[in-house]
Length: 103
Picture 1 (tube, rainbow, N blue to C red):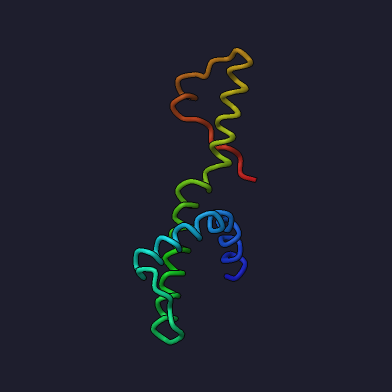
Picture 2 (cartoon, helix red, strand yellow; picture 1 turned 135 degrees about the horizontal axis):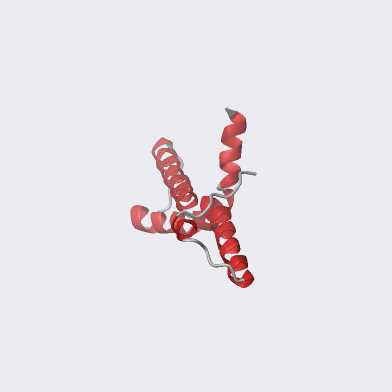
């Protein structure tokens, strides 16, 4: 369980790094009206809620875009190298590109 959770966290950590500040700043300005949180249980609950929103947003961005990067790169590379070799893809290859081999 911990290994799987660590792997999932590592896979979208770069996306989390990229999007955490803009979304956190937006949420702080929009939801908190630029007010500071004072120490207490209510503020801790708000902080955990905002943290959950940021992490879920980052995972959503990873899920929609970043996780497919390797596949897209391989498909583009195959098409570019094929076009330089003079071979035209068949209709079936164009409609159903090969799925890249799992690493």
